[in-house]
Length: 440
Image (cartoon, rainbow, N blue to C red; front, side, top):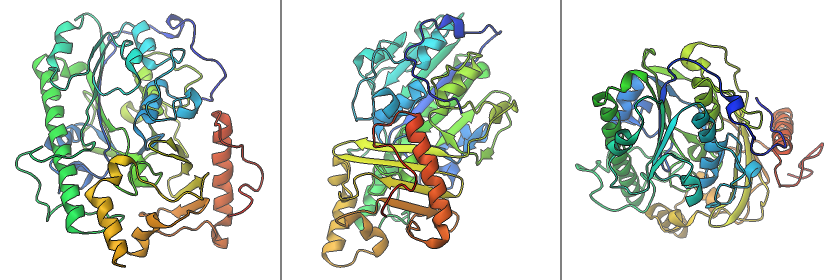
């Protein structure tokens, strides 16, 4: 992986660009608060996503794509810069992208790309001006971008949907999903209120899927589909307790589908992918050199068979959302270690989750003594400093193995790996030391 440097904005972007014939167009579709499992093509048949399912049928679905932060704007900053949020000073929710931080947009522009953006970017108004074309309004027609683009230049188009983010209202999708048939993940209690909440979540996903279909149809009708690579992903996990805002898999594992013309379809890859890898991949596809400051690694090789250096781990962080809760995590193919830097704090859901029917159901079940131990961990007054999970035997992350003598070597190895990443990426939390943490 490219190591970070202390250099800021690179002075000469043109020096990074390389010449190559007919670079591809790139379209990036980004859902808002969407866990990887919640697509029809991912096996959740309780959610109707026909357009994204067709995209997966003609492309590749990456089952193990992870965000750098289970929060909106911090993770989006990583998508634009290829650096985790604490490296660029954007780890606090709603922090604008600093003017001196370079994004992949400037590098694509130097390569000759026309850049467009729709709707949610969440990096501040000044950042929106980095696009050649930008429209914030939900009512803005996708065709407007294609109408204004120079036809002799490749383009990059970013579409940031606001679904399935809360608040939820009725009649988002017709017909609505059958609440009796929605899939209730094991990390949530199965109650009428939770099912209604999940049904609304499914309706909003289906509405977003329909808009994805509109955009994909435009590519076809404009004759652009044959030279356009489409990426679809989510900015962080579903807006439910134990997901969004946490470093458990439902909070950090998001969809990723890539469809490239001429590519074999219906492929599912299990390699670990981080969102910091996205800009490196886009630059690689455009034959632009990846700046050394970017922490991601291109996964172009998984699309076209070119050389690919596989990741051994992905890293995530949570900081300030509606409350301060510094968390760091490292995840390998099999194990996950979570470092709660403020273990004296209880779990505190983000405000949009705090008012949800699901969280109210948690509190009511607890009041009646009906909340299971697995679900009740979110209501404990404190949390362990370190959590360790074997994802092969415990995919729901219920059994904390941090104090298990049989897993001590794994815990120490992951602690070292997490500590090295924190130091190498200029984290502001206290540096780790041999034997860290001293007490569990």
